[in-house]
Image 1 (cartoon, rainbow, N blue to C red):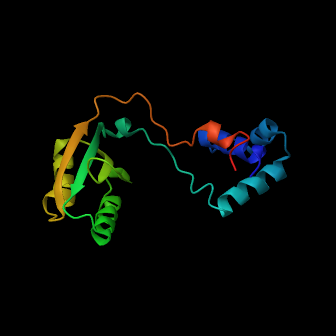
Image 2 (cartoon, rainbow, N blue to C red):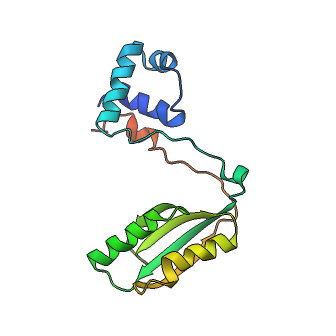
Length: 159
């Protein structure tokens, strides 16, 4: 991967629907060269997928929860089972296996507390491997991004 690929990745993370000619101008390449590079980035799974970012509040999904989960047993099969269960729940947006206090941190959304309570029953309350969970409710959203920082994409020490 060279600096032109990294620059393309940075641009695509900002807006994956940019016209190829605009991308080509930005990285000083021809449109066919940009097409080949993007195809290679997709084929090598550097670009995993391209999705639409939906405004959750426009759909009345306005609650965001940060959930800290502690398992009863730290055994590989139990960790994997919980990870699969969390990832399969449509209210869970992100799932992190963590060090420190607790075993997992989940980012979840819900339309209201009833939806959230139903999720806690599905994921935590009926699972004998859950020692406990703590929840923080986001009071507001200041910033959200899933982009890899540009400084890791463009620079001399990236490979």
